[in-house]
Image (cartoon, rainbow, N blue to C red):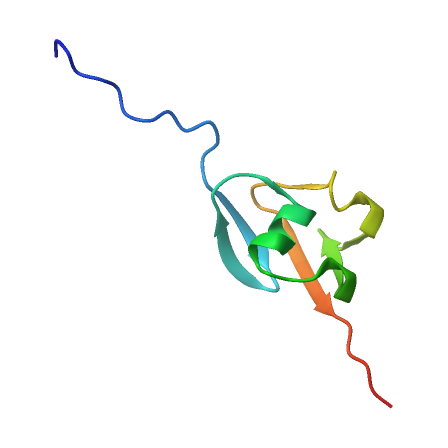
Length: 80
């Protein structure tokens, strides 16, 4: 069609993951840091497991969560 403009181009399709055992959709692949920020979770107070492997906190900014990944976010609980 003359003058028609193409719609927006998606650089990444949505990503479906398992988050704490439940299906969760992300707009694109995210780092662990970005996922925690999106969920409003303080990274200092949780441990993260990606596909049954613990992710070191130092690697949160570099570790990318992709389609089909299984992520577990575990809160630290204090008590006595």
